[in-house]
Image: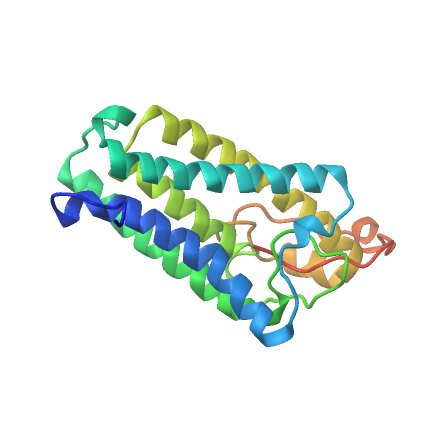
Length: 227
């Protein structure tokens, strides 16, 4: 029997939306890239850097935990997970954030095409600066964070808040790691781009394009924007 058994659709919506997020943010792009190129986009497993492996493992653990939380919510109900009741207006804001986050994630992944990876790939890929990447250097991460934080508006609980804070730290660390890789690979091209486009949102988190930074030597092939 399908485990999402509830008395009404409203109670099903939260766990089903988590399942939808997992499928379209991770499973769908992995399958799509494999069908197009035959490559496996899980670059975390190919990178030998221990920090990158640790951050990748942390992201995988968090997403697994989110799915477990959704299943527990489906089977045990809100009271068992100490989910607080929020006003309808606050929940509406959360659902709007969820829709925007999912749409942003899917659109940005599609715009990356075959350059999309999960983690920093030792093999170089192209630098994407068009579409949503004109406004954010990491629109996929932006969409994911909007999606995850939307659940704090919809169904807040201590476990979820703690997990979102931890995931935000992991995304930030991964972003900094990717920026260093992109500077090594694309040099002044990435620095020029990063000096004009914000890290997650427009007009925030710019990098300085200096002569010192632009002379950063290339050391080893690395990937473009990922996740």
